[in-house]
Image (cartoon, rainbow, N blue to C red; front, side):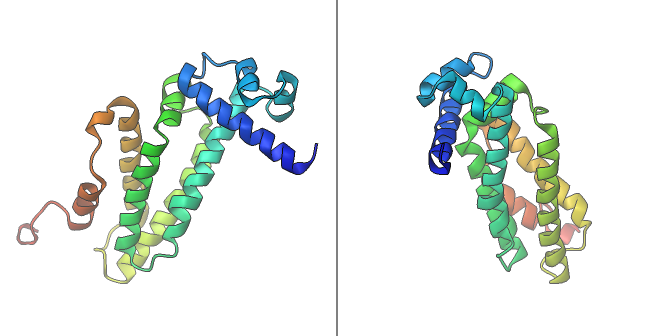
Length: 193
């Protein structure tokens, strides 16, 4: 098997898995169904993934890598810390909505703890990027003094709550611009400080 056809086969498998997991759920999808949808033999499928759990973990890693490259990595290039946080919230919330089906599959069928070590490693990188943005904002006097590590955790938990809402209560998602406005301006009037 050459590298190109191997890559194409893997992509077909992943696309088939996402489609079938979305339609039938993780538990209702078999490796045989995935192979048929991908247009390969069951034996061929097992050359790439030994079981559904490994395939599902691959999907998680793939989506986290995509989030890193589309949402987090570009933040490093934005000079203004407040603009970087605006982009973070806007892009992260957009990404969650775009990947709603996959989030639902993992939350409902496998639980948020599935692939926990992969997620912890990813969250550590995300926290470091946010911490660096907040520290730059403090140094440039764009932000008030605060604990960058704690604020980074808070921001990530806001996103985490949003992701949970995508699954549990999608009709009640908050608007990114309102969240950004409250975070950057606060609720209290300056005279009340």
